[in-house]
Image 1 (cartoon, rainbow, N blue to C red):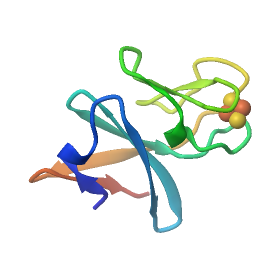
Image 2: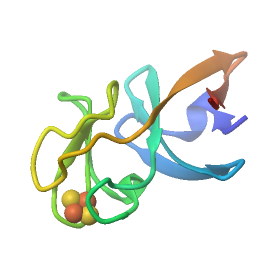
Image 3: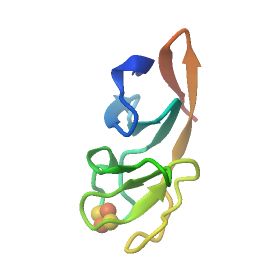
Length: 100
Ligand code: FES
């Protein structure tokens, strides 16, 4: 379990450490996305970056690459590699992530 659904506002991201995985949980309107909290360019925390609500991307705060919240793929340079994404489950208002 990561948090309750109402603990995150739309456009907000928060870091969680779960069983050795650094995860950025992102809310966009009623959807929740879990993406590895580690930019593939230089290991910065994506949870500290800006969420691009319309594009469903998150921007690395260090050099500005954005990552697709659904696929984890970079949408702009300098990052060229994707980051892991995780399945999110919501049960009774509780947000959980499914680890591989
Ligand atoms: S560290 Fe993320 S784009 Fe460079």
